Length: 180
Image 1 (tube, rainbow, N blue to C red):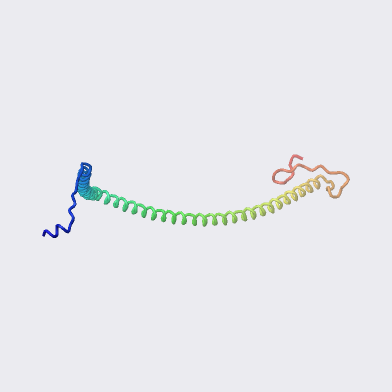
Image 2 (image 1 turned 45 degrees about the horizontal axis):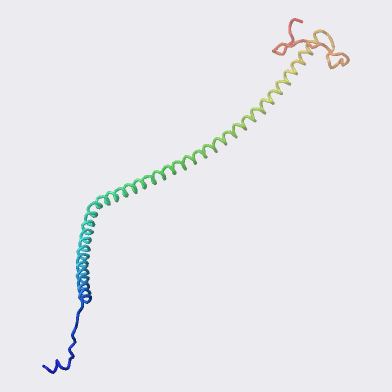
C-alpha cells in the first residue's frame, strides 16, 4: 500500500481564512435555497388547498344562484313566448279589423254612390215637375186672363199687339180675383 501512496503525490492544502469563509457562504446559501424551496412547496400546497376549498364554497354558494338564474331565464323565455303569441293574436285581430273596415268603407262608398244617383234622379224629376208645374201655372194664368178678357168683352192680348192689356190679379188657386 505504500506504493500507491508513493505514486500519488501528496498535495498539502493550505487553507486561508478567505477560503473558509467562501465555503461557509456556499453552505449557508445552499441551506437557504433548501429552506426557501421547502417554504415555497408548503405555500403552493396551502394555496392549492385554499383554492380547492374556495372552489367547493363557490360551487355550494353559486349552485343555488345558478339554479335561480336558470329559473329566471326559463320564466323570461316563457313570458317572451306568451308575448309573441299575444302579439300574433293582436296582429291577426288588427288585420281582420282592417279588412272589415275596408269592406265597410267599400260598402259605404257604394251606398253613397247609389244615394248620389238617387239624388240626381230626384233632382232631375223635381226639375221636370217644377217645369211642368210652372208651365201649368202659366197656362192657368193665361187661361184666367183670357177668361177675364172675354168677360169684359175685349180682345185678348195676342190679338191686340199695340198696347198691353192689364192683367187681372190671380189668386193662389189660379183663378182671377172675384172683386173685379
